[in-house]
Length: 428
Image 1 (cartoon, rainbow, N blue to C red):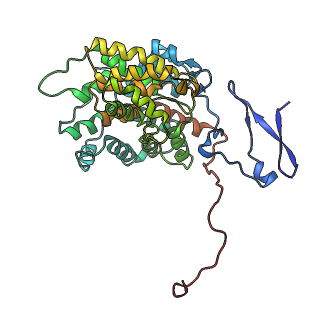
Image 2 (image 1 turned 180 degrees about the vertical axis):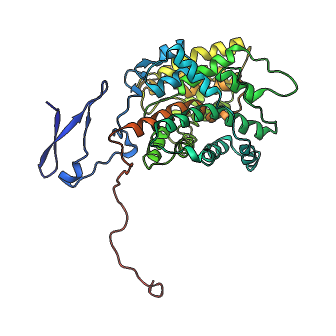
Image 3 (image 1 turned 90 degrees about the horizontal axis):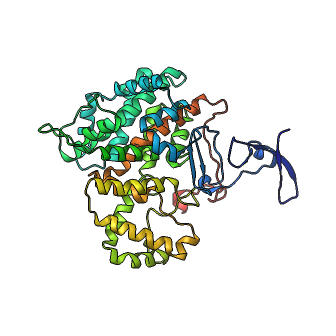
């Protein structure tokens, strides 16, 4: 017997609405017939209490601080898996066998090259353009390079697009960075694994080989795992909304990149570094905490709290340990880390933050690791985009495999002028 809930309006009219259950998590009220039955829409700013789709990819329990990819706890994947294996898991729904992973890795490796014409495309940007602008434009342009394989109803072409995006995103990202500093582009070295190959494309120069500490690749691989997906966040929802129109995967992912760029989303780790630099010294931390509690100060602690997590961000627990390992292994002494740790300690002891459960999130620590790896601040969100591509394209494919997918069309509460008549300009 299906479950229902009774809704009653102000005129005391009631109706039965069906409940939709997932495998875990709260039930959702199916309001598909609400307007037809009552003449009312729902009002939910930011869609904070609205489920826009069914998905089997990622589950979050914000109260308990739980994050699962396809049912696997993020803690286990961070410890035992690799980013490329996690990408396969998100796409296919299961961890790969050795043979399946070998085939997937081979496919990604042999699609890492970007078309030579993309060099000219990148040269059309100012050298000091933000890398996210270059990345967004370049990824959107891929639909022009692969216009003959854009049949979104063909599963083989959808999968090919997924492979291409996961493979080429690091290549294009590295090219955008090197163009911005006047270095020649580096072709991908396909004898290297995914993350190491990217770091070589970023930092290797023709005059000498790159001496890469293994902890650098391990740390970046971990960050990619932690950022690979996060349920129906702003950028993923954007990919799905654009994808719902029938837009091709490259246009849809480019839209996700644009959404990620916002400082309230993917740009948050960049904002953390700017905040720490503004604080300037550990002796100023207590003053910063006091300013953060004053709503009239205009100062906000970046990297604390989360829209979904009402407990400690599980990714932050993992990345905090890696932050210390990276700095110890690389011999980095960074005053910003001292400020960050002092800020964390002060905030977690302060009743104002404890009562509001404003715990450090993943952005608080990730910027410190990126800085230790010599990745410039304006590339932080690009790193996020490389990782999140696996989640974006997994959701895009899932959407096109769904039986109840339809074009996204939110409604509104209109607050403008009521109907009025046009008045000629000579009478105004």
